Length: 109
Image (cartoon, rainbow, N blue to C red):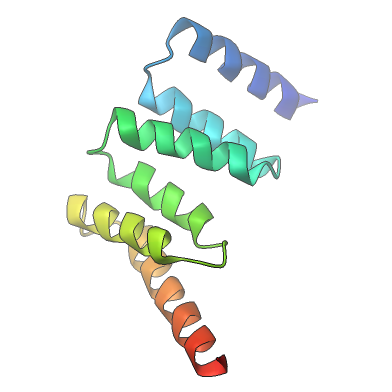
């Protein structure tokens, strides 16, 4: 119930301010938590397009993309996040996890 209310509030906020990267990012997180991965990816992509200098937006996008079979795009997002903020621990972890998954898949092939 509360989650739906948060979604409704964010939808309304985006109607009023469609170019707010932070609202798109926040809405992406709500959608992710609701299990709506594709919709969350769309919101994170919009946030990174609106404010490409925010490392955390790239890290969040990379995190969701890393759950998909082809994680090259996830690695690109993690790398961009690290370029913007080398101290962003989540990006370091995400990049390492993606590399380990890729290596595992290559060994299995």
